[in-house]
Image (cartoon, rainbow, N blue to C red):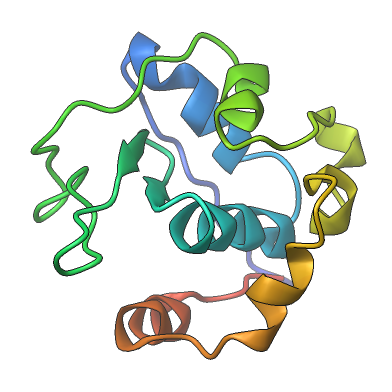
Amino acid sequence: GKRRRIDIKFYPYKERAFAVLYFTGNGFFNRSMRLYATRVKSMALNDHGLCPLNKSDKKSPCEESGKYRTKSLDVNSECEIFELLNLNYREPHQRDSFDDVMEQQKTSNLLLNNDLDNHEMKQERNFQWID
């Protein structure tokens, strides 16, 4: 039969909103959120936090070999993450399309029309879809 994989992760309480956001919605939605945070807001979003990007090398100051170098922005809910990114909040069951949360401005084309840089390409290559 089919094999299943179950991930069990433990997060510090202060990271709960980022972890919940990461594990809700589909893969496309989550990847689009991270790409939007990077390209439009110059921030790094992952399951541990939301941090400003280091402008000199576009590398996230949130991580260095999996460990934080700088403090993530403090949030208490997923809704606050959407607010920090100026996106419309959607409940987890409504997270099918990233277009549903976009700002009123036409920024979706910015995400689709730009080529990925080397760092983003590396992240995309490391991403694996699991059916």
